[in-house]
Length: 448
Image: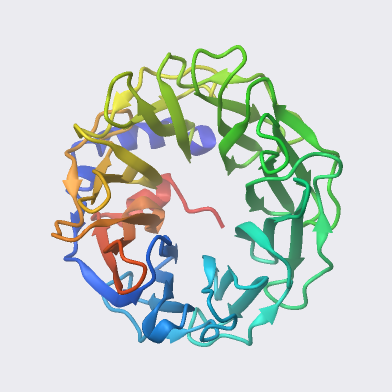
């Protein structure tokens, strides 16, 4: 356990049967935040202590603007909706890729609309500063990270002839931004992942925008993004690395991704661990390790336990299942997987957060037009699973779900789209709460 406390481990064991177990998380009724969201864009939810922040792209009157709503009481009530983005700054297009992140009193919202746009609040989302137009180029793959002192953004910029760049920008808590930097050197460009902890900044990207068979690349900064160390290539033995994710806890940095092709029986979920804050990485570990097609991994660290979930497509099945595994030795070995979903159709887009003593997963089940948003959580410290629960329970199509945890995993917050039309969709929110939140914060304190 964190800090190596045997007493903490025993205490956690003792809680396994308590009402505070993840099975006891009780969901609030569904709350509709809007009925005018654009389709096919995932509403984003994030938390900081008792605050909940939700953003989406709204299509009311053809605006295509960014909307924001917050709760300051853990999701019990919500303040009025704020419009953050221009009412269709570019005719015929809407904002996309909207992200939200809270860090103490600061709330950051960024999106793409004819370039990179950014707004920040220093009063927990009560008011926001002006829109900052950071670029006017064709951007994609936007990611956002922050510490108590800095906010960071990473993205890719494509150009002709399959050439492009991985770009990075930083600012002290949303103030004046430094110059945009290109991080990929002579390597390819593609989707970006970004993480920050203390003075360390980690950037992970693939090169599939330039070459479908390209690898996976990593760079770190140890001075708050002012300078970056040389590029490390983490993968490249197959026909393309994708679906990559980062997880950071102390000096441990985990990169998880999907790779297909040479030397592998099928598409596999792979992992590499750094035990020295990204200075170097250990060997590749095959997490899925079978002949099924595996993809879309998610990774969560809980004390010394590493959880990895992914989509697993059995031969002959209509679609993939969601499965979960866990390592207790830093990712060197993994316990046998557990099947999380129970569908006869397909389970897609898994999301995972720390919850209770373990993790909670959310995914979309079914085919377009008849989809539901389902959830399931682990019980105790291992891979035992509670029941599958249907969050949406709607006659309408439900999907594009996001999830965030607060109060050290004692609360989880979900937001998703209801409806699959280009315009006029609902953003729906639900929250689940465990008792004894203070106990969870003693054992699994939130990162600061």
